[in-house]
Length: 484
Ligand SMILES: [Ca+2]
Ligand SMILES: [Ca+2]
Ligand SMILES: [Ca+2]
Ligand SMILES: [Ca+2]
Image 1 (tube, helix red, strand yellow):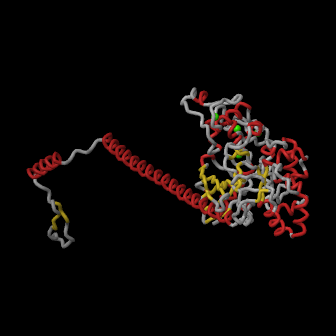
Image 2: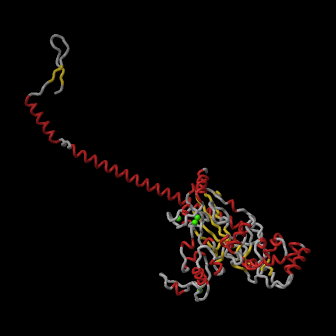
Image 3: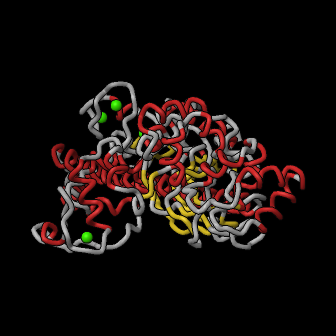
């Protein structure tokens, strides 16, 4: 059926294009060929089948997108987790750094038992690398809205191993039965004190255990004592930071249970310690001078060194030689006629005890009102007066002498044997966050300086108690970190 060029016509016009049509039999053959070809062509798919293919393709596409999203989300979580771990590691390292710093500060204290000259009250949101660190202290009174920053004095608390039953009974939340059980727990015999509990009682517990009949090794050990509850031990201060957090003043809306009175009512743990101990040595390493002994030679040498020969003579005349009945340094101070400034200079070199160390003395310059109220001869009223008349710089000029201006002689004789102006054990409560305010960590260390070198004798991770710095500091920490 190809076009063919026709010859020019006889009139000399332009050539005509003519189609040469196949002949009839050829047309028939052509038709047959077309029909044969048609039978070999694939049949056209129907419309519904095309739709299902599209749906399957779409499903596969959706599946692939879902898998991609899942892995992206999983990677995002992984990234966040890694970021948290990095921030947590930064916080832990910062806590270790701050603790080393505190141990150095304590090692450089010139007069043993006095507070470090370096002011740790500035340890509020201190940056260490990308981390931020706080050293949590205790306000006086304990009830504070804002956290304070410093060391926590263990000598400001009542010693669980030396306090008498009468002293224990005066603590907030304490009951006579619980005080009896505490005495029974630590005394070596199996004789039940009034309201107390020995092994027979503990054998009825499930699981049963024996009464310890030995000294407490930690304040938390009180949880094993019969009659002790979480409420009595921890009180309203669930995160042990010494301030009233929102959940500690909302009744039973969120744990802990509290009385919603706008005041923090801490539990026993706030007022108790097991580590307070004062060494019987002087700053030069020799034994302290016992002022109750008849020999005055050592005392004379000390007084002449510190106060001069003339003043030493006057004081020794005043003191006399018959001092065996003196029960405390406070009594000796009253008898000596020294000024508080004079007594402050020699106080750390004197003792009335023949023991190598004295456990459980309470630092009258740092103790809370609740603790001072437990001391014989003081009680709640005088405790309040003592706390209100305490000098703000009492920790830097440590002496018990000022107490003599407040207590009557009878009270002074009773209270004197329990009081001191020195501190050798501290809790170093360090909290930190890593970069971007993440990875919060908190560790409470117990540091003992009684043997000269600061020794960290206990580490307690209290991160699980939650944020301890209140709302403002959290924001400032985040801000400080974001600015870097
Ligand atoms: Ca016992
Ligand atoms: Ca609190
Ligand atoms: Ca509550
Ligand atoms: Ca309260």
